[in-house]
Amino acid sequence: MTEAWRPEDDEPRGASGPVRVRVPAKINLHLGVGPLRGDGYHELNTVYHAISIHDELTARRGDTLTLTMEGEGTGELALDESNLVIRAARALASSVGVPPHARLHLRKQIPLAGGLAGGSADAAAALVACDALWGTGLSRDELAEIAAGLGSDVPFLIHGGTALGTGRGEAVSPVLARPTIWHWVVAVADGGLSTPVAYRELDRLRAAGAAGPPLGSTDTLLAALRQRDPRVLAAALGNDLQDAALALRPSLAATLKAGEAAGALAGIVSGSGPTCVFLATGAADAERIATELDALDVCRQARTAHGPVAGARIG
Ligand code: C5P
Image 1 (spheres, helix red, strand yellow):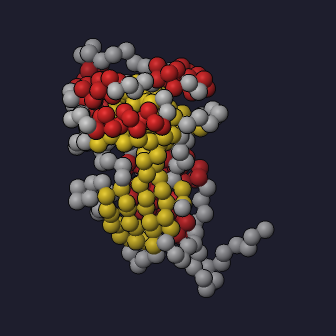
Image 2 (cartoon, rainbow, N blue to C red):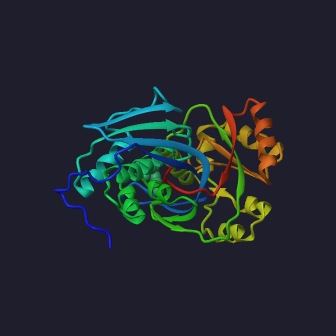
Image 3 (tube, rainbow, N blue to C red):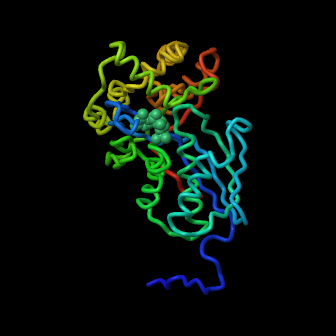
């Protein structure tokens, strides 16, 4: 049995050196959007998938709570109390009763407002990093519970992998498929799209009878994952928010078309967009498609990624 920490101990709990956490971006292999609920959220039926584009958060001991950053979105992203990283650190501190003191530094590769849950990823990283820094020792499920109060996607980014999301997306259960590595091309757009605006646009399209039929159950997608054949998975990918993203950003139609013309098995808008993701048959195929997309004027940058990968982890 390990000895319990006592407040009178000289040594503070937790890490004395910096804690570095890597956290992935997410895409949705299936994003089924149900009706608008009374609380302003939509009921979701989704399959989350964590991919190998990572942000990195470093937490050091400090006398106050501060956040600095470098990389994607520097100069655009507010680093004040509105930032999800700061809100996550404060939520953890108040739930366990420790002072919210840390110097946090974020290195961002996940684009802002891109439909890849970058802000949610950073919140998940802050929970894992501060838990280690402060020695609060919460389980992943306990961290996921705090995460749910910060945003619908945050619990998934604590867990990672491939997982089913229900409720408003915060109720996550892992998909237990034999491990298969899927290869993706991620076409990052210029500028972002607002998630609430995309959901509102879907409501508007549906009310006008201008949206496609809702995707419904995740059964086909889950069966496709078990078959481990990228062609089968390609046919099962779907996103109810895609019509809304295309209505708000019509140029995405050309991006999707270009990826498929370059030989991708399928392309979909990621989450609420504007990032588009394409499934490739393998790593070399993904590299070739990304190079081809980069040579065209259909996205800011095409990157390759694979999934599933782990959620927010130290190291
Ligand atoms: O949960 P999160 O803060 O990330 O959600 C941002 C916004 O996206 C919500 O305020 C809501 O407008 C929309 N949303 C939704 N239904 C969901 C998740 C998000 O309508 N299931």
